[in-house]
Image (cartoon, rainbow, N blue to C red; front, side, top):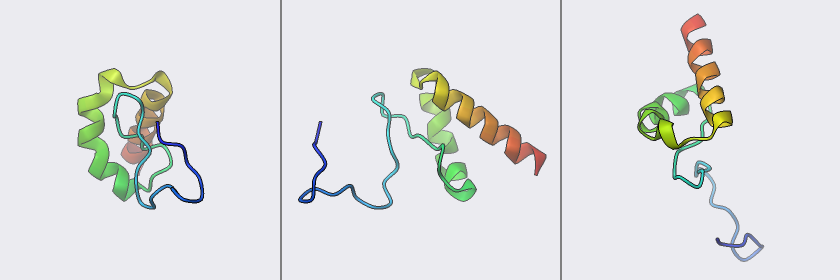
Length: 65
């Protein structure tokens, strides 16, 4: 695990990842979410319950629009 400090700031524009490497799209814009949707479906089984619930809510919100 890389420690974050002034010398090693987190890179902007990178999506947070879970330990399993699944892309987390909880705080991403809808356009970005659509792009990672395919990845999310592939990694769905290895995601945490919280991430799965968030994606489910995003899909429901997308269907309402």
